[in-house]
Amino acid sequence: MSLGIGGAWIGSLTALAPSRWIFVGLAIAALAYAGYNEWRLSQRPGCDCQTIFSSRARCSLLGVGALPVVVLVASPWLLGVSPSSATQQAQAAAAGSGQGGASATPTSFRQIVLEVEGMTCAACPKTVKTVLEDVDGVYSVEATYKPPEAVVRFDPTAVSVEDLTKATADTGFPSSPKSSS
Image 1 (cartoon, rainbow, N blue to C red):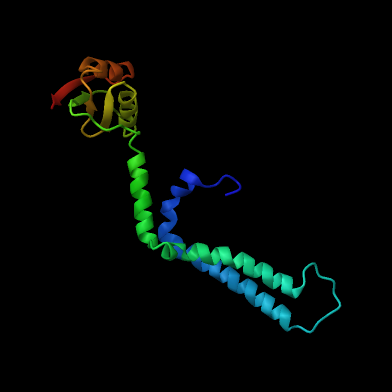
Image 2: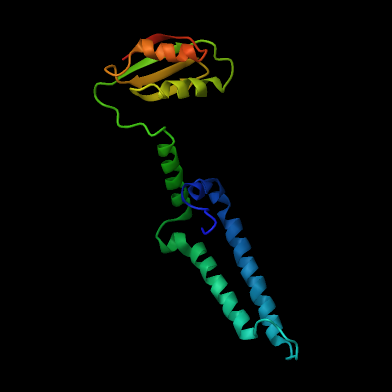
């Protein structure tokens, strides 16, 4: 956290959640190894060697280091959330926030399907979507490569169909209305 790692970035690591048990196992194994080494050192006869920390200080440091690891490992159960449901909630939140921050669609909205020409690859719909979302009055856009079209939900009092087709044409993707509702 002190290095600036957290917030939205750490929330996007839900792809690692299915492998959580591996990381938990590694953390517990590392703690067990450190504890075993400390126990083994305490079984040796005392020597006159100068060490930086006494045996008691090393045990205390191990305990202080183990406590946050144990709390983090147990946190989903302490908070009453299973790791799998936490992952599902994070993925749902990410999917909801990834919709371009569209505001609530008013009742006066209109939907139109634009047939888009010139889409030659699977990346083209992203360009069409981005261009249409930048037009004021557009609430949402779904663009597809096959079939080459864009479904646009917009406010007809703020933007016209001609504005939408002009925006796509200016980007190199001429379009024409297919249907509307």
